[in-house]
Length: 153
Image (cartoon, rainbow, N blue to C red; front, side, top):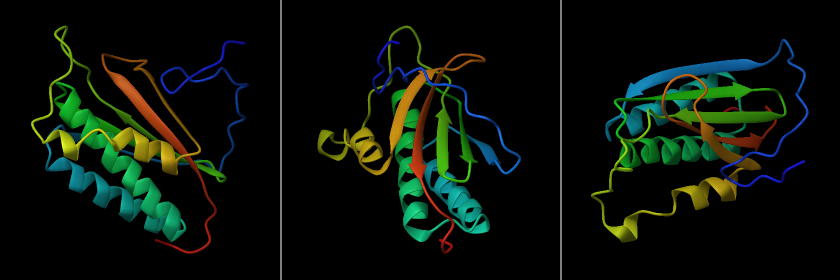
């Protein structure tokens, strides 16, 4: 078995799919204004799913950081976000459309304001990583957070 890192997930045994997996996905234009909309959509869904408030806050932070990275550091026209609640874990996945051969687009913000997004994701997640999109161009960045359903957002 080959060890993984943040960019290469460790190979794991397939998890059995259960009927109680809940999924929610949405697509938004890759514009800075869409980050707030993404947060709002996630908050609404987690409230509907009755996810605990502290997990709701952490998931919203993860979505905000991953969505922002997709907008700022790629040349995407759209960004797709998916939430998957498997009962014990909530998984967030954000897919961009990739970068041109010249590399990622540079952030226009001050350097002091950027660079902490993935550190925050790492701090609040039990696991996270990234891989090339299975269909089409781009990259998927994902994070998992353990949770229970004790108390809504």
